Image (cartoon, rainbow, N blue to C red):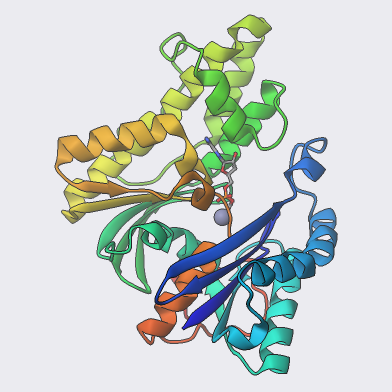
Length: 334
Ligand code: KG4
Ligand code: ZN
């Protein structure tokens, strides 16, 4: 079985081909980051227009690289939501057109399920049950993945997503969008204990997060500081965010008694977080998995893989036939 994955939910136009026998054959990501650097965030209309320009050439390249044509594909899996509606509809239209003309089976995929399953792309023995920390630009959740397609949300952010906090603080530090990778780099030369930024809800016995207050604290701190202090701000901010994520994850491990831990989504690319997760795993005697950096941020390989898993395990088809910009993971089949 060969699965073609299509991802266009936000600012990446991505195509991938996953083979049941050989694993990931190839994937292409056309990122729109350069388009949005000057705006400090994604502009939905510009994003949709760029997807429309890039998706067919990206598809062509991905197929040509492996001497494949649409007739070699057995399943088209595309991101149906959540995301920007105009951007989602570009991927959806391409998926539906390919499916109709070439008579290929089609499966809509939930973007977050792609992230949740992403570590299994490379670590082929990895299977649920596991505990998943999902940290991206739009979401921050701790999930109990009991089985494929069965994801219980144990806790989530009550305001900003973790990646969003990185992006907003990046903006305060004069860094271009997206701030996450740049803060991470700046933090390497900083002192993470110089500033004690708030660790909201850290000692509460629930698994929720709040990241909206920390950017205000950073804003106030910056009033008395100079540019030379920015690496210390970046390192202290990153430390505070990672501390909260790790503390809540530890609580979730104790509550669920899971023996496997997974971290995915764009912020899972953060070096400091990955190191802290490894320490936590050692301390709690559990295993930890995260995707390679290229599969942490948005890509189509994880969508193709989610399509493959859903098909292989004959999971029920999502009840959706058109793009769903807002689609909570808790309403997967609604
Ligand atoms: O998963 P993703 O590509 O898109 C969404 O589904 O949201 O995540 C993008 C987010 C951005 O907020 C970006 O700043 C953050 O992931 N990010 C990072 C790092 N790389 C990407 N945050 C912290 N450290 C990084 N190294
Ligand atoms: Zn994502």
